[in-house]
Image (cartoon, rainbow, N blue to C red; front, top):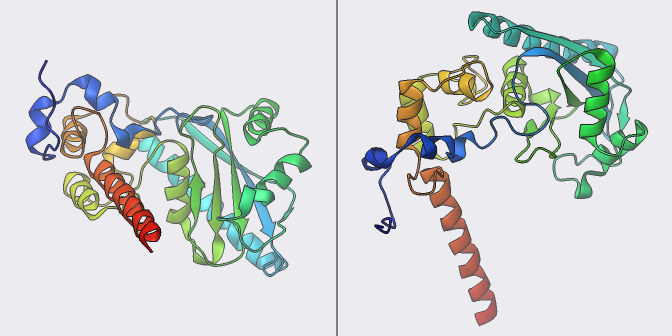
Length: 277
């Protein structure tokens, strides 16, 4: 058996790819993972207003505006799903306000605010609470959307394994309709295109504008529609994109894998410098 070369250029590697390699590709790592598999059927967005010591939801007009943003995002996703002949019905449900112990949400140690949310609902895990809510309301999936009244980078906590927790944190002062669309797509398997630069370039060349490239765009591109379950099969364009961004011998994203290797090398170098001092 031939040993694989240590480095394969993305485009030159295309001839080595098989369907098995494409199915193991790192860019598809969130597809059909976690409790929220495909963006179809009946979906419930449980919106939670998060009050922190310095940022509280006391203005009723701001609450209404935030809820309107959530409803607009839901309506837009249903419209796009209809274009693919996919049945999607998204409804919203307002949960009781959450009192967070700190202004820090994203990098909060131990995510105490999330643990408080789970305990207040007499649940053991967030996934368990979501399953209970889905059964109670007759929905296929439930996604908690935590609305934080401050500026920041909104994000989605997505699952790499079936037991991982999935939810969205929306920093409303910095967010727009397409910001929530972007984060909700993450929950159902979509990946970011805007980093690193090489991936951004290849994604733009392959699919054009995409909400996964920038939340200023509302376009849900072809590959994203495949990842979230709107397209059942990979098109030729999707296969070409995966081949240009993958390592055929590991199935991993060539670009991201290279960056991880660089980061590990830099980390080891810094540790060596510390020991030398």
